[in-house]
Image (tube, rainbow, N blue to C red; front, side, top):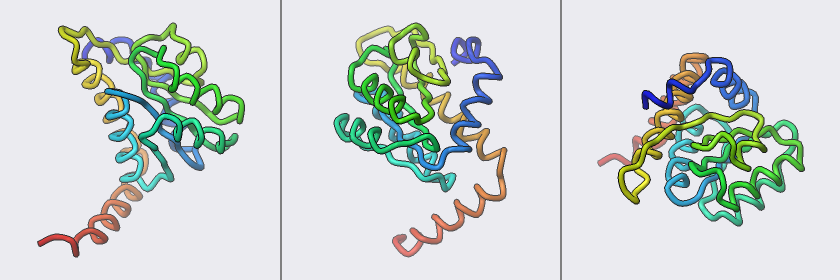
Length: 172
């Protein structure tokens, strides 16, 4: 987390916030371990009342990307930045003039070269399980979420209340 914070510029982070806040619709994609983080990002967007989709299937991510336009944002999370499906998602989004954001551990990757804004997550893995990468990615999405809540705390509170009231009847 410290290494990720060390490479994060305030301007880049603010640019990511502006893209998210200004999007008509957000598409979130990722595969494997990064797909888990993509689902977490999706849930945070929903908690903010943002229109968002995050298909788990990578082909569906590409199909959704084909339906985006200039008012939309496509967010792709891929630690390596070289996995083909996330790259295809951003290529399709760019061809549709959608805004693009990626969270990656490789700022020189094909994925990063496609994105309008690149947030770099740093990890030093000890084994084959990408735990450190996911922790760094989660720290970035939690920071984005917290900053978006701070930008519009009243709206975030009202959205949270609506969701709690909607699921409250399901409580035992």
